[in-house]
Image 1 (cartoon, rainbow, N blue to C red):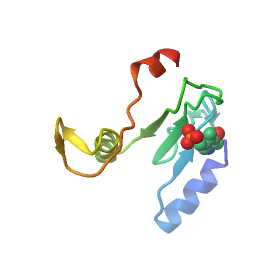
Image 2: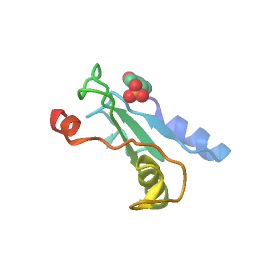
Image 3: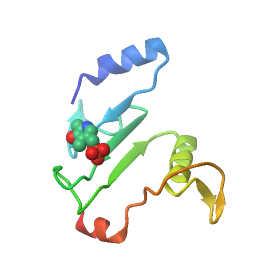
Image 4: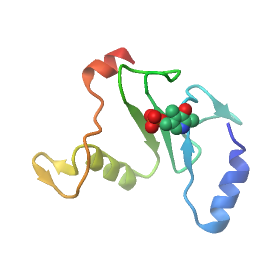
Length: 103
Ligand SMILES: *Cc1c(COP(=O)(O)O)cnc(C)c1O
């Protein structure tokens, strides 16, 4: 992993969020903390060529802020928080059962 202490310090100094690119870092840790739990959010890739790949595109976000997590859940299901009510423009980013089974 990158020097997360230094990155976190720079982000704090400038009021920035830290988004970890942990796409192929499953199982890695930094000073005893698993990657994906250090920044404000982290992204993991399940693309077929990755070290944890599924049959097509897929990925995962880890995030600590509950409000931001709610926003992401809404965005991944076409911007809907309640079935058939679209509060915002989102996208289809659910991981289907076949891909989940492959993972
Ligand atoms: C693959 C990869 C990405 C992009 O992931 P996608 O699932 O293709 O969007 C970004 N960062 C790293 C380190 C990667 O290995």
